[in-house]
Structure formats: C-alpha cells, structure tokens
Length: 157
Image (cartoon, rainbow, N blue to C red):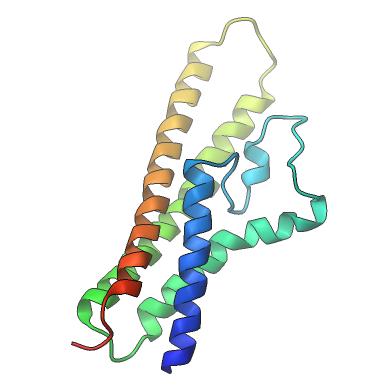
C-alpha cells in the first residue's frame, strides 16, 4: 500500500474510531449496527431517519480501515503493526458486544410488560447490560488510543 493511501486510511480510521469511542462513552447511543434497538420505545433520535444509515456505517468503517491497515501496511515498524492489530481487535469487540449482548438484552427488557417493581430477572439483565456496555466502552476507547498511538509512531524502524 502506498503512503498516501495509508495516510488516508489512517485518517479515516482515527476519525471513525474516535466518533465510535465518543458515542459509547459520552453519547446517547453507540454508532454501530443495532444501536436504534437500544433506545427506549418511543424515543426519537435527534437526526432525520435518512441519516441513520450513516450512523450504522461508522463502526464497520472503523473496523474495516483498522483491519486494512493491520494487514496491508508495508514497511512499518512492528510496534505500529501491533497497534493496528490491537485497534482492529478492539473494534471487533465493540461490534460483537453490541450485536450479541447489549441488543438482545435490550430487546428482552423491552418485551417485558411494565411493572412497578423490577423482577430479579430484570435486575440481572440490567446489571449484565451495564457490564457489557462498560466492556464495549473500554474497548472503544482502547481502540481509539491504539489508533492514535499508531498514527504517532514513526513509519520505518
């Protein structure tokens, strides 16, 4: 891969992983596929419906660029390659945690009828959701930190 293409991919990766980490840690919802199903019923996102497909693309674009950099970058130091691989693994963890853990838990919680007092099962699901969200937030922030470190590392050894 030539240097200009690598620079463009690094910029895209850094931007999208930063947006993803920010949305997980400080935003209303994660910018990964399925995040709409995590919002309470009746909640309307602030963005128009036509823009939702772009929000869903941020996580996969971040993962795709990270994998491309980890596999395709030539003539880079081993440290930079390890940081690119760590970014890709962490972003894959964010997507996997969202799709396989938080979305199904949220669906189950929403399917239950409203009650005055939460059941033991609902409290357990809420604790598991909180733990999964903490894991994916940590992975997202870690991916962003690794992307920044990879961008700051020098190219040749």
